[in-house]
Image (tube, rainbow, N blue to C red; front, top):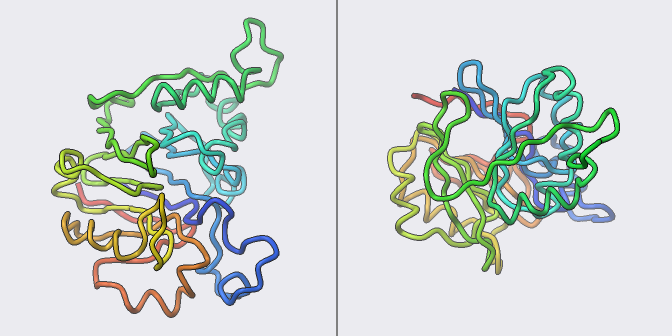
Length: 255
């Protein structure tokens, strides 16, 4: 198993348009962040997590040619707006794309991409099959996926556990019952927006507190804003098993 961090940036990406801060003006490629998304490969099963507005660029960069399912965390546009860019994959695979998420999120997809659900869609639209996620684990092919219910301020959203990998973004609260589902991880990917506290995202200290509690072998931070600071300055301050996510990095996961 392995996970590729397709994007590790917050809703505006990094650099932010028009921003002259040191991070946005940095020439270090590690400070360049597309909107948050990930790609998980388990044998010959390929799973995309979120489909933000940078998805086309991310798939080209990582040479993605197969997606068996898309797991949606929530409906905010930095996680959803690029869903139509899955069309070339749909054409190559010649099979409907399976999309999983909370029913509320699937309702937004059906509204925003209504042309894909019409009785007689015009040629060229992707065929999307929507599957609601509730509390119980579900499978994509033979891969079991456990939904992790977290909150983004007051908005219920989903993280996902696949084997010894867990992926959580945009969270500001995880209950004790959901944390118990995250024991025994090899790799945890979790959001850390910035150093200063934020009303709807974990900041760096809060993310590190979750990591200390769960004790994964490795943890990678994602959904990072320019307010976190320069990679070369922040990375050396982190615990030995914690890393700032880098766009395009592929991380092996022990099974």
